[in-house]
Image (tube, rainbow, N blue to C red; front, side, top):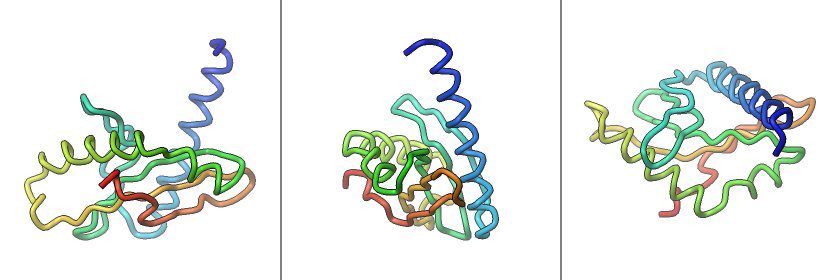
Length: 122
């Protein structure tokens, strides 16, 4: 992929994550981390509301179906392993419940939040 296209995709991803974070904040979540990197992979957003931790994958696609299909089994497993590493470092991890969500950033629409979008390959 040429550098110009990579930069455009990077900016689109950043904008999508910003919109997704805003949508979650307006729903009462607190954004704990953005683009959290571990040795096992990256988590786009980690959001918390009470004892619920939402591990959120953000996909900017033309349709909701394409966004859902873009998170394959390998990606789900990678995200779950990264989430396990993050969770293990939390002092209150024993009382936290974990959920894997997807936010689809669609053209000319408010982001669509799909709760329990995948099981993390479990």
